[in-house]
Image (cartoon, rainbow, N blue to C red):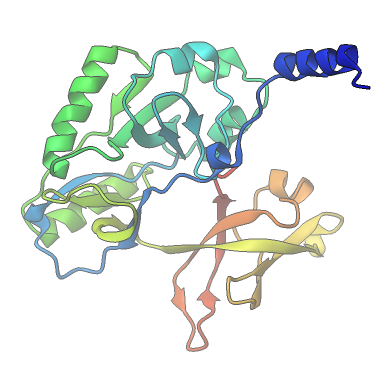
Length: 283
């Protein structure tokens, strides 16, 4: 005989249970990724912007997400000010302030005062029709209508030739910036890695996984000396240069994805002069 009271109670608990994030909702969004600038292009065909050292964030019109697909724990007022349209951009504090920014946006309980300093710098409209030139105008219109001090479009500009591009890169680097981004003006929106978007920096960069903590020697005795890193093909290398005292006291956990810089690859395909840059922005 069925226990109707038990079934009714279970049904009531099911209705009252808080909603969970589905696998589809937590999946990393498919975004446009840049190839590296290597010269040989017609520079006037591209819109150019500064490469910001921020945390990439995708707004789907309802939820703000990291590249991993996990929601960004931003304050409600920050999210309520965003428009209904999908946006792609960077959470940013300013040049050379990535670690400070990362600490703010990774807190499960947002620090309201700290978030007042964060800006969402938009550089793309995911899924929108038209060329990139058309999308720039639409982005500017959307941001103007939203009229929020923390929401802005990354300034885009054009240059005449490769010499002007190199001069602009030098100017950005002297001011403490990371480099430049070039987006082909006539490009339709697409996802995945594409030559429609190019990054121009003095260093190469890549990602690897932390698989070990190597003890320090000399002045680093008693704390981290270097990270043992694993490349996607399974090969290992040590990464010690660029680590701050804070990272040496509290190193990234095993399994963490780290972005590092290097000058070039050795004949054997290993990074030459690797330098720790940051923990990948995928909380």
